Length: 103
Image (cartoon, one colour):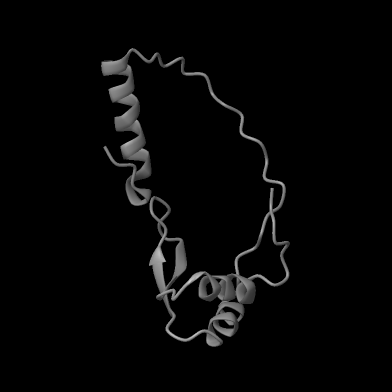
């Protein structure tokens, strides 16, 4: 059984069904109150994204719809990392104004 990002809700529901049917798990239907995020990082604007990615070669921004939230879209960036330093360059260039560790 796989939990896939693009089919998360369906895959998770299937896993729960298997756990209940085959392994004796009990669904108590109790809602869980999740904590509020400590910080809310705003999305980069198109100009900020273009500026940050212009210093890195081999990157291609691709806009796609957000699963289960049409018509919202997201911009994903595809490229090849040559190592940890290369991937760190992307993070540092895109988010210089944010703290390095977020708890």
